[in-house]
Image (cartoon, rainbow, N blue to C red; front, side):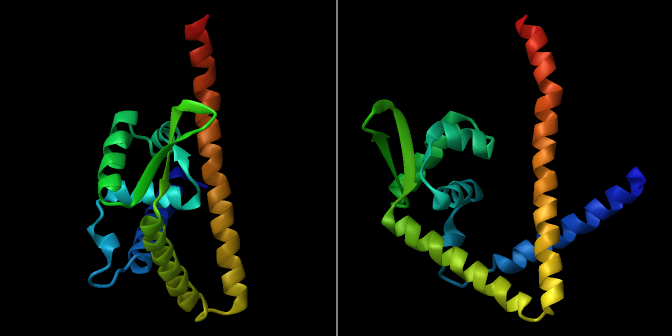
Length: 162
């Protein structure tokens, strides 16, 4: 398959993915989530899965530790997150959603899931299976990019360290 064709497909998938994401993320007037800046929203989304260390959030979101700290300050002030230290290592700060933040973010996720379920109900079962499989394969392929980048960078890092 030619690079030009793959690029055209990437452009088409990106456009469709963006449109679908906007449709799934529609919010209602007065929804507190609409007031959150994107960076703060990304932190809350990450914390919905589980608490994270500040360093882990920095790596996961691709932003500096000081930026995570600033975001945490704002989110804590808004009573959406809580910072705490582990009892076994007082140096490690962790962050989790507050009960209020968790309620807001779970409601957001539930709305998205219901919107997507409504869309999927309009499709035949075979199409739903195909879509789920295609998204899984796309996600799996995306993981290999990170691994490939590590494989390309590691020898360079090793040369510098030698």
